[in-house]
Amino acid sequence: MPRDQVKVIGHSPASPEAVWAVAGDFCGQWHPAIATIRAERDGRGSLIRAFTVHGEDTLYREQRTWFSDSDRTIGYTHLQGIADVDAYDAHLAIAEAEQGGSSILWSATISAPASRLTAIREGTKAIFEAGIAALSEQARHGEAATPDAKLPAVAPVENLAFGERPRLALSVTPPKDGPLCLFLHGIGGARGNWLRQLAAAGNVMRAAALDLRGYGDSTLGPRQSTVDDYCADILRVREALGADRLVLAGLSYGSWIATSFAMRHPELLAGLVLSGGCTGMSEAEPAEREAFRVSREVPLDAGQAPVDFAPGVVKVLAGPNAPEEVRTRLFDSMAAIPATTYRDALVCFTSPRERFDFSRLTMPVLMMTGEHDRLAPPAEIRGVASRVLTQARMADMRYETIADAGHVCNVERPEIYNRILLDFLGRLSQ
Image 1 (cartoon, rainbow, N blue to C red):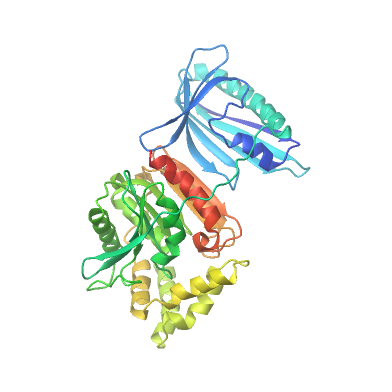
Image 2 (tube, one colour):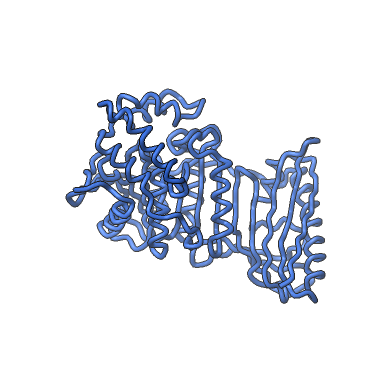
């Protein structure tokens, strides 16, 4: 099938923030060609805009495939309306212009029969040019207002434990209809690191934070843990809490476990939230995995426990502006880990069972990382998110950089993290 591209670049004297306040509203009626528009959701909760244009009766439908508030970018794919088009994928990006104001880039890749390709390309170019002019004008006059942020209500949380070898300990909010959001902590954490997220997410859907085996009030199993064991633990939690489908929300090691579960049980997931990385050691060469494990086992072999090297770990995890109370929380969670648990997790993390196949991800995905994350820097995680967008079937991908945060971004900047998380969970609970 013949393909072509359209790329239109414009400039606005308004700030990128003002332009994005208009353009980021995927279902907003800001384009002058649009006569009517409404928001829809598909079975997964993915956002679709259904609209008509002036002078036509045709109903057009487009699905949002990519969204990043921090990058000011949005992507979408055509579902219905353009005659004879085989594929139509578009991308809109707002950036700060060198000469001041904003640079607006709107592009599309089109596949269609040769007899239709030129007409679709020229029509697209005209639509983009008119849209960029409208964005600039509306932003310049401040027509888009930013709503006041409201603090979410606090959901009650209770603790429970079940099973033996391992016993699994949870903090959980009261039952609600819909999916269960299960939070999985990092290799240096515990379920307490998710308390701010539990209290917020529990107002949208039932939420639980798990102490991974050997951490907190959970116990290790009878043998060295594997990622398959962690996946089995997630299934046990699902059964114990009577959940049908899950939203897995992980940080670092927990993100790797969550993605590993998604590879095995995509049909059980309503959504996936991955913070501070996701691929872990799954794409590292054996020598790199071995070096990672050995370097972190050196203090353990010398008789030290995590409490002894926790100060050095906090320096790596925390962002440069992290307040002392955050650094103390990170230290406390690291210091509480038994040496046997830390070694068990290191061996598991450096023994991945597969290289991830992102085409298996059929659920909406949200990826976040801290602006100052040294272990999962924004450029790297943005690249992984782009791979998910390219490889996943009917992708629904959101990527965000958490401003002024390090690796444990949910602890350092809970207000920013929760705002993004609740926006994502809200559409999955409907």
